[in-house]
Image (cartoon, rainbow, N blue to C red; front, side, top):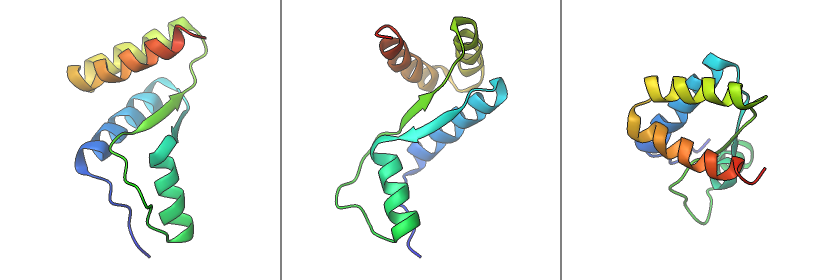
Length: 97
């Protein structure tokens, strides 16, 4: 079976996010092109025609307090640059909900 070419940086970011989400009890789903790649390679042994460089995730928080708990954990444990990238993207999405 072939393996997914998942560069070290994306893997570390995903690992950090999953750790943070697990710690504060937030369900997380891998979505987008990275999820497509996992399904194509893992389930069908097909290498994707196009490669992606990002990691798209969805997280379900119960309320603003739950979001703030996740945010605080991420800022304190993931490294400032990575956490701010995630949080900026999430705040943008949340503002439209």
